[in-house]
Length: 367
Image 1 (cartoon, rainbow, N blue to C red):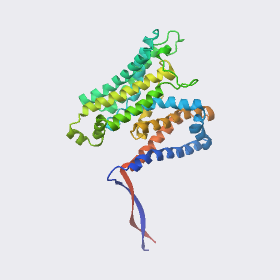
Image 2 (image 1 turned 45 degrees about the vertical axis):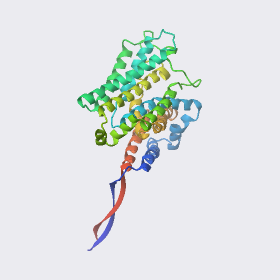
Image 3 (image 1 turned 135 degrees about the vertical axis):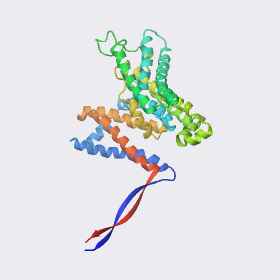
């Protein structure tokens, strides 16, 4: 018996000297590709034709004009919320409660719409939108207060407030705001035409909210890339010690991040109930506030990237609905795809700050 040396490869993660700009771009693209390959495996295990399922899920929904408009309708709230979250995340301010801010925007703006149901004036819509923005900003200001006053963890406070907002909406539509002529269904009265967002394309649900989303992308880019405040947000996120030395007020940036992200989530909420829905229901969101977190990171915390990421995630919503109808896939497939995408995105993002380095070591094998 003798020992035969054997070279065994070994892979380790080595910290990069600086962030890889190449992998910043490649990471979301590879994550999407890996998600599609995972979809093939998932559909095969479910006994479905994987190619037909992928076509039904990702291509068929946008082969008609109505499908394209629905894609834009679904993407609108994701853009509005995602840009707001990206601004906060730039400064390491972790607002995880956009779902609640979205809901409070719908409550405040929807309440204003119900209050003005008998008023015939073109000033009703601006008033409704303003109340929606203020509602979301108010709900975002609560975790900002606890963070700056008591150093409470903003992840927990903002997240818990989301459940309070959803339960409050449910109470209102089951109780004081329930439509007396609605056959006891838990829903409010329909909003008047003066409180509804104008439709942009005939025979579709595409409305003025999509224009707001484009404007927010533009203004978000100006704020982050071309303003002193944006510079401060980036410095606080990348080098907190340098920001403190430069005299940047961290508490002020926390308040700014939460009020902007909350206000935009509130705008998304009122745009949803004054647009496609037209009234208040027990649930006005399929999870836009949580999905927008994925959108913000998939878009690399850049407003233009958020726009394209929102279209991808919106496609998962309408694709999931289409797949349920056409080939009988369960509704949970939409959430599954979003979760898989987030998993691969986080995995690929490791290579932004680390590189894979191969080495080998010698082991002995008896013969």
